[in-house]
Structures are given as structure tokens and as C-alpha cells.
Image (cartoon, rainbow, N blue to C red; front, side, top):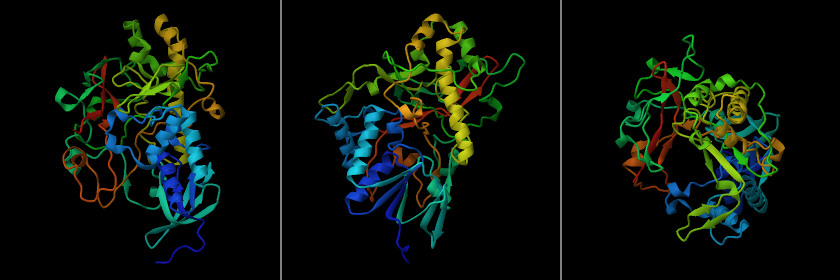
Length: 443
């Protein structure tokens, strides 16, 4: 098998996500020339775009090692700590990733998207970017959240959910959490997909947008639907915070179900709708067991709240994203921003919102020291899952829950099975249920 003549680089990596950055640094330190093609203007993926935690509390110590642990140690040093740090500010994560890439002499081509991939003798030879540049390499890594290099190379893939029968998985397919034994305690509380009071139909009997009728649900059946997406928004309570403006195309009717709910429950609090974390506070200590303790400051991270009447997760808005083209993805990203920014604006300004809740929402703005070239909004949508390669071996729930010992281990990973809800299902004229959640301990 012949090698490409005068390759642009030894290793070409698509996307400067945390995985892409760490792979690049590792290869460069071993003497390879490395080039990263990054679709945005920034490195670090979601860890530099609002997701400010390693979720160490859900993982075993064995999961942390190598260059990844070096990254966390560098974060600790930035904040004056002698131990690794597993919480951070987005801007600090990005600067740390940038420094590691610069030290390793890795070339990063920003705002560069893959357009075509040339495969010869079942091997990728070169790629062409959307602006017509050509890159060849001896080796390629797809580190993107979407698997675009993989897909354009003709590799078999899928997305969404297989049915239970595909791999004999009890947790597969469409599902409600009906039995307390079906899910581990979450935050000290067993989570059940109970009917949520909210009218999924309009007064004239039409199903509201982004609701699925109950007669389309077939428990255990597969579909091409992935779990919900949203932005992992950083907000600030500091005096210099940037007001959250009304987004273009803002339509308060998006939140009609929430409006009706609040009319019946005027004591609803902000944190019953949206999770608020102090992760990017900039103030940390590390306990003896290595746990990072973030101390509340003036910067906060927002996340989708499970089982809330309405939260940041844009249920139904994500379905087309995994296999969509660039234009359609851009529409989906814009729609998610309109939903997320619109929700925060609605809570802070809509006259139907109770005064106490409105006051809670008004204390938050966007941080003046984050994402300055993007209107202080995170750079990337929180794409929780997209395409999956269909390889010689497909990992299933059996590998995670039952047959965890392997003879050909190259790395160890630990985490609970954590799939957020997929869709809202209209179960009656007055109630809906969230469907698709999996939260299972793998003890």
C-alpha cells in the first residue's frame, strides 16, 4: 500500500474538541507533524464553550490519567492550586488548550470545514475543505462531535436509538421510567417520568409544536431520535453583566405551556426550571479526596433540568441535526439559541411571569469576560450525541453493565449511563410526559 506523496502532515485531526486537542498534543510529542482542521474560531469544544466540569463526581479515579490529567493540573495551577482542578471557567480552559497546542507546535486551521474526503484502497488519502483547500496525511482522526469526517469517508454509521431486539438491550428504544427500580437515585431523589401538568394541545385542539402524540410511542422501538440539545449557557450576576436581549424571531407562544403552568403555580422558582451551577465561579478548593469544590462567585453555568415543565433542553428541535448538511445544522443551532435565549428573556420580562420568578431571572446576564467575539454567548451547541460508527464491534449496554472485563483494554472510562430525555409526549389534553431518559449506575 503506497503512502501519499508529500503529505501535508503526518496526522490530520478534524475538530479541536478536547479529544482532538489531547490527541494532537500526544502525537506531536511523539514526533509527528500534526494539523487540526477546526470549523469554528476557537479550540476546546464544549469545555471552552460553557461546559465547565469534568463530572468527576460521577467517575472513578482510574478514568483520569495521561495528558488529560495534565490539562486538569494546568487548570489547578492557573487558580493557584497544587492539585488537579475539575471545574473551571471557559476562557481559562480555552487558554490552557491553546498553550498546550502551541507548545507542541500543532498547526490549527480555524474556520475550516471538511467538504469532501478521498478514499483509496479503503484508506483516507486526503480531504478538501469547504473553501477549496486540500489536505493530505498519513493518518486521520475524526474528533468532531458529529462524525463528519467518518461520514464523508463512507464509513457505516447510524444515529438515534436501536430497538431492544437489535442487541438484546433492556434499556434500548423508546422508554418511560415507570418503575423506581429502573433508575438510580438522582440527587437523592428517584426520578420517575410522571405526567407533567401542561396543555400539549391548543384551545382549538391542535397539537403544539415539538410535542409527540402518545399513539406514536411504541415502547422498546428504535427511531432516529437523539436526546435533547441546548446551550450550556454561562451567566453572570456581576455589575458589568450583559443584558439578555430579546432574540430575533422571538415568539412568546413558544412558552405557552409554561405560561399556563405559572398561572397555576405562581410560587415556581427559577431553579425549579433551570439548573444553576457555580462551576465557572473562578473560586475553588480541592478536597483531600480530589473533589473540586466551587465556591459561589458572580459567574454561573446553566443546564437543562430534568422533568421541569419547560427547561433549556429543546425537545424535538434536535432530531434532524446528526445527519443534516451545514445549512440545515445552522438553522437548528439558530433555533436552539432562539429557544434558550427566548426562554431566559421570557422569564425576565413576560408579564405572565410571577414577580418573584421574574426578579430571579433578571439577576442574570451574560458574562462580560466570556465569548466576547460571539456576543458573550457560548460558541458551540451542546450536542450530546450524534452519529455513531458501526464498527467490527458495537459496544452495548451489556459491555457497560455486565461484561466489563476485556482482554484488549487500551483505556478505562467510567460514568453512569446518562441519557437525557428525547421528546415530550402528549398523554392527555392536560398532561405530557418526558420520554427517553436513562440514568443507571454501573456498579
